[in-house]
Length: 335
Image (tube, rainbow, N blue to C red):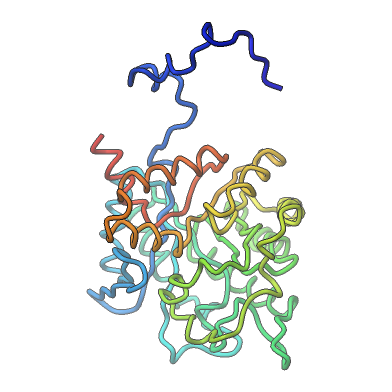
């Protein structure tokens, strides 16, 4: 309980807001480049650059161009990039077996990034949706229900492929029950004791993911299907704490809440309850909304960008995956 020791006029909270120096003295949260993780979309080829129409300013790029992005991340002090692949339709299958190919797009990108920028953290997505003909994160049975154990077998192979390529962090985003423990056990058995797991522990069945699915080419494959049988119901809050507890017990090093701003209450509850490294994902739909409003002159781009980031920090997030990462880091460096 907050105890008020004096009242107006002895207490005038506006006194501390009067000048920039005193506002700075009492500021509870600050934003630095170390708070940022930059999600990037990578595709095959050389000198390839494709705009993502539903995400203004975001591109899919080939590895040679991605290396230039990585160089800027290092220069700006952004500690990590998260990779999301766009693979050709010709390699997509029902079981998503391309996800386990050691010479596939993601392992090749990981190896090159770590060779050229060993100080930059590299995070890979562990889920099958970019690789499947049906666009689901797992493997459906004849009725379309995603089979948990069969999916986990493939996810473990995918995670091991990434670990063997030298990735720093795998981030299972599939929401299968028990997949964190299965991946952790496989890592231990294969000697990948330093490979970290960032668990998408509270990933909701949200309508804010649409532009992302466009970017990785899974939207058309998914069609009118949904992911409600494995991603969380947006109505639930207590359930998120159970999911986080399970993932931590199974060996997750850090946890994530996704989406971001519409779920800041979940971020706060997770941080307060578990006091572990807690991350949030400012997802594609959130980014697209702010960008569209700014382009129409309805909002000040940089101010809402920075205010949204401060909201994550205030809610307890230790870091944020955001497509604004480069813009934020450039602004911070400029002062």
